[in-house]
Amino acid sequence: MSLYPSLEDLKVDKFIKASSQYAQSTTPMPAITEGTYQPQAVPAGMSGSSLYPNLEELGDYMGLALNSDEVQKNLALMPVADSQVAVPVNYGVGGMVQPVTGADVGIRRAEIRPGLRELILCKDQDGKVGLRLRAIDNGVFVQLVQANSPAALAGLRFGDQVLQINGQNCAGWSADKSHKALKAAAETRIELVVRDRPFQRTITMHKDSTGHVGFIYKSGKITSLAKDGSAARNGLLVEHYICEINGQNVIGLKDSQIKDILTTSPSAMTITVMPKFIYEHMIKRMSTGLLRSAMDHSVPEV
Image (cartoon, rainbow, N blue to C red; front, top):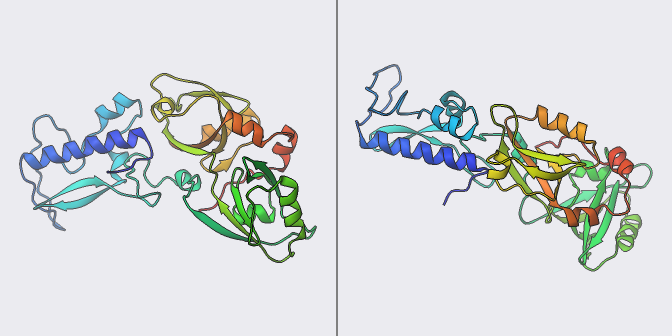
């Protein structure tokens, strides 16, 4: 069973498979050989090459302004019997099929990986790591990652769960105890075991021909969805806060700044969201000014 980053990828993949099956069931197509060109008759009801299906009708249907040229770069020619057909290429994020999203870097930046990872931190010249933690439900979570700090350079993000500090299990710890453990650690080596953002999820969407994905937000919170928009199709929910856009943290930014990031994003866009009640508990007793000025809002490397 294939996995897809968005409903648009699923629909286009099904369309491509149906077109390929139709092409194979009609006139067989000889294998492509280098240096030769043998035009084939196009079966009735199909336009363009039977290797690469025509997506104009599908693009109009989903409001994506797709065309075959845009999608062909995400397809590969694969031998089937004595013919070749175009099929979607699998990319690295979970082995998902992405004929529309393609090798989009935003989805890789935003990936929430399963399992655990170990990080090694050191303190800066002031003896700090640039990390603020919060205790929630007997777990310890990252509340703030300061820009250009050791924590930011190590790849920690808002919402990550810290499971161990220097080999000590953090379950049941208070925020104060966690901060004291970091303060008491050696300056040159602090070992953390981390789980990626367990309270957050990512949604990949695609801009329509007008450049919109179909949601409205206020103060970073999703307030409404456009009917039949990509956001609604892909399961975005209201009463959720936007934490990242294409992997870039936007917590604390003004709505106008978030709008600029959304506007300049490519047609495939992945946002990371967190439910309202968890988000508000996570940032409790933190001022908007601190979030805006201190939080790491850099674009992560992949």
